[in-house]
Length: 265
Image 1 (spheres, rainbow, N blue to C red):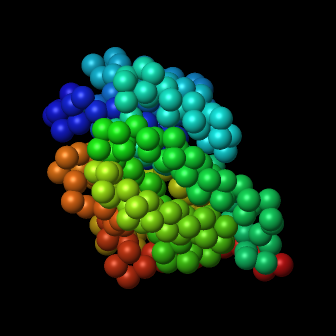
Image 2 (image 1 turned 180 degrees about the vertical axis):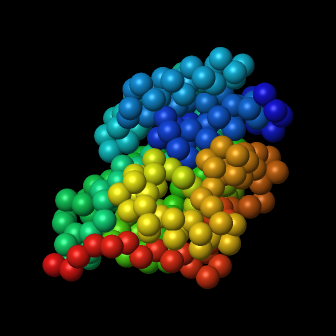
Image 3 (image 1 turned 120 degrees about the horizontal axis):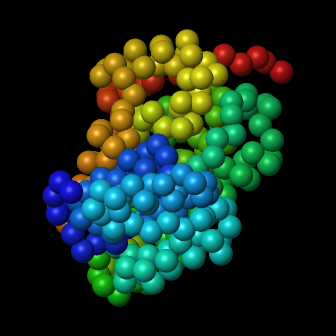
C-alpha cells in the first residue's frame, strides 16, 4: 500500500479484469479503498481481486455483463453488501466491435455501443445515487474517449456513444452537485486490451500513433492513469465536477493522427 487518500472508501470499477479498469482498481486499493471488481471475464476478474488481496488490499469480484441491467444493479449492491457503501463508481467496461466505415455500420453495432457506453453507466449511476445522496458524498468517474472528441475514422458508433456518455456525465454533475457528488470524465490514451488488439491487427498504424503522441507512447494503465483516477476519487477533487480530463500524453493538443486502413464499400 502506498498511501491512504481513499482509506475507508468503497469503489466499484467495471471492466477491471484488464487494462485501464485493472490499473485503476489496483491504484484505488493501494490508496486504501475497498474495491469491487465487476468483470465479464471470470478468470481475469477473480485474478485481479486475488492479486489485490495478496498485496494487502481489500477486493471482491462479481461477474458482470454491463449490458444486463440486473447484473449492473447487482454489482453496485455487492459494494454495499460486502463493504457497507458505494463511494466511488468507475464506468469503464467496453467490448470492441472493430473498425468499419460510417456507411457500413449496422444498427446492431450502434445499439450495442449505446448499451455499453450510455445505458450501463446510467444504470450504475442511478443505482448508486441514493447511497451517495444519503451520505452527501460520491465520486463518479466515467471513461470516455478521444475517438469521439477527435472524430476518429472507423469507430462512429463508439464515438457517438462516448460523446453521449460525456453529456450524461455533465448533466449528472449539474443535478447532483448539491449532494456532494462529483461526476467527471477521463479521456485516456492507454495501452488497453482494445488498443493492444488494434496494434496487433494494424501494427504500422499503431506505431505511427504512438510516435505522434507528444510523450511518444501510450499510457500505462496503473502508473500513468491510475493516479489521476485516485485524485478524482479523493476528497481533494471535491470542487471539480462536470469536467473532461484528457489523460493522454498530450495527444488532444493537436489531435491524434488516427488513420486506420480499411476499404471503401
